[in-house]
Amino acid sequence: MGTKTKASNKSQDLKGKAKEAIGSATGNKNLRTKGQTDQKKAALKGAGEKVKDAGSNVKEAISGK
Image (cartoon, rainbow, N blue to C red; front, top):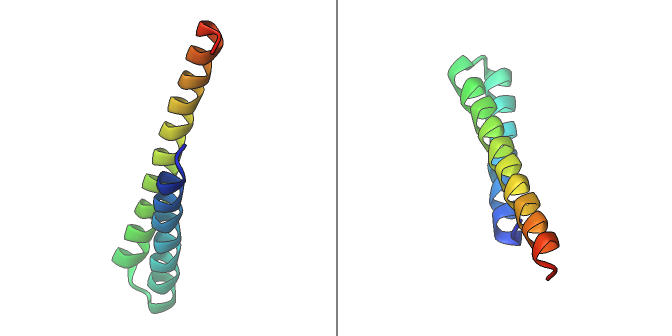
């Protein structure tokens, strides 16, 4: 996974945590839910990148590079 992608995913996760915390503190259910959604999106993107990395590693192992 590229450094830029990792940073983007981490940024989205942190923003989601902040939204969730602010939403919880203020009683804003909508903001809390948006924060949770942002965190889940970041986690899914990270998982997708890990799958791509694993596929590349398998490809390299098979081709001997």
